[in-house]
Image 1 (cartoon, rainbow, N blue to C red):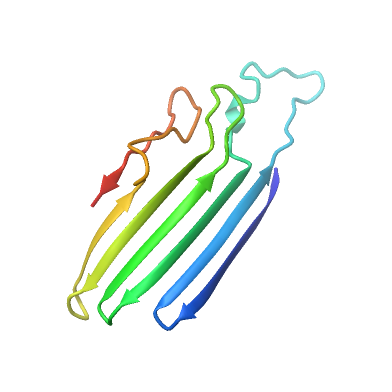
Image 2: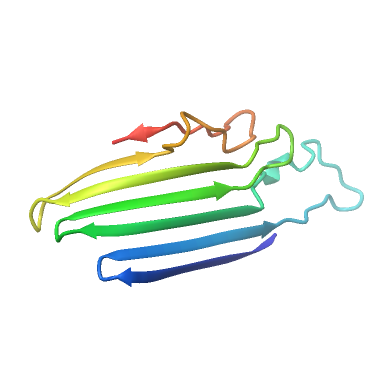
Length: 131
């Protein structure tokens, strides 16, 4: 397996940052000649070939920060297939004092749930959460 990963960040203004990144994964596995694999390479796992993520953080005054990010995850083509999906997360943080911070964060805000793995025994199905 081999891949590429690239990430970048820019400070747009004193209180506004933006980041963008992505990964591309290639796999080329096979069974050695004269050997057999009863699991048909299933133990190697299935991963999306592409993942892209963008995020921004904005300071509102000196004590409040808002952070938002979105991600696009490519499809998994092996059975059972998982379509590509888009998801978003966000967080609002208030620095009450130098020692105390309060925040509200949400994950998987665009859908109630989605499948991230096609492992029939341990498929990951994260759900929307706000904490």
